[in-house]
Image (cartoon, rainbow, N blue to C red; front, side, top):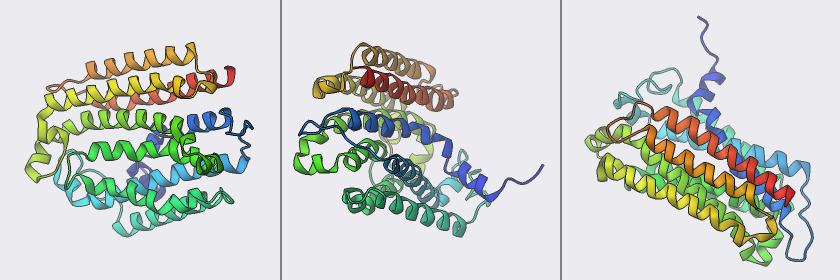
Length: 306
């Protein structure tokens, strides 16, 4: 069998296909930012270049964060039987190669932010955003809130998109950012919940290595309860969005989607239990991809029809 190319292994290492978890929320923020009138009542005029820049920034930022995560966790991954086969600890990729890849992606992110000029907000925020995204990889060394850190990191997507497309409105009236903050809060709770569930696989290893995680601190049963609370919070936050921004026109399609998302999250918690994590990949990857894409489609349709 032919050896996979370095690029293919690099994309596998950063789980490039999982970009689907965050990208729909950036796309939904784009739709909302276009639909919602500016303070003076005019519509947002989005250049095709802005849409390209959003895609570049989303892909590049996530790639930097994942590559840095693999570099930071190489020794930890090597000691964990579940992750010892990953590309860096298995020797399929070298640190030098992954470092260069991360630097190139970081440059790509900065270029993407510069494409929004004359709106200077994205470029001004680019370095702090990258630092926060990469900081997640170090968080589990000192705080069990690392899952929340990851959730907030992904939740920056709708906020950054909003600031990039409605920069003048945000600077004139910071409350203009509120719909994006509500969407971001839902993303943060959602990601925090499913990352806690995923981390249950490493409960014993994290304890033995002194790593911080919710399962290591509270046990699998406690972790599942906290994850369930996060997911319930996500649903409640999404229900608030139409009242915060009535001009979006979110109606019965959106509410039907929220009901479906709630059912999917209940299904996710039924797929895995504290003493049975065999179907965790199905719960983590399949269900969550449906949640993110489904919300984008339903809310997007409602925005345009409303």
